[in-house]
Amino acid sequence: MTARAAPNTVSASRFGCRPFPFVTFRRFHLRLLARWYDRHLQRLDLAEIDEHLLRDLGLTPEDVRRECAKSFWQA
Image (tube, rainbow, N blue to C red):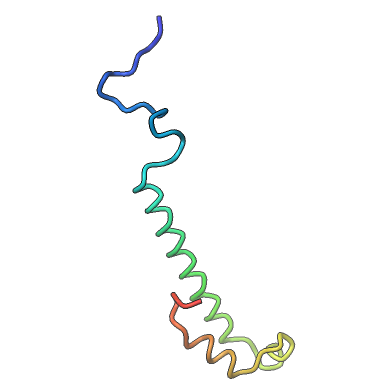
């Protein structure tokens, strides 16, 4: 005896293996928020680097000020 799906249910084969659009939409936004938060933390760390280490990286204090003045959503 084989199990049958109820007549009103949607089979997975109808949509294939792709998630529903709202799941993809939510994943996209969660990744975007994580990227923005990570960028914010990186800029906080950059602001605390000593000047002699900045020279080793090839950056000037003006470069750091310009980068840290950007909003978290700006790359």
